[in-house]
Length: 114
Image (cartoon, rainbow, N blue to C red):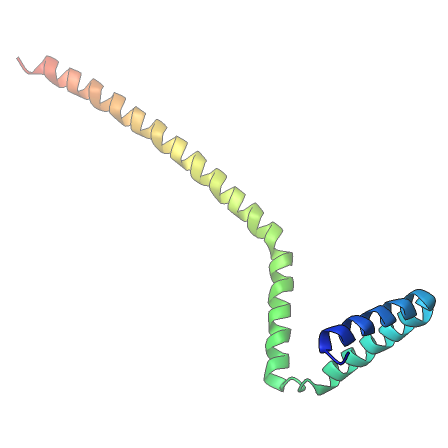
């Protein structure tokens, strides 16, 4: 019985029984393997260049400034919208006043012309 499928299933069943018999040890072994794998990945990864570190620092500063400035920008936007709405309302009232003035002037001119 040297077929790989049979040996894999035997290995899996032996590993499962070992984990059931020694759960604490199995947990510590898995934790150790994870720590070693993480350390290897960390140390094998190339160190960032000064340009990469500077770019990351600038991105971090931009993000923080954006977070700090967001409430002020939202408030300024609200104030600008309120001002635009007020100006628009005032413009409509002024148009109505000009229209009324022109109607009155037209009526007086018609009275003057026979």
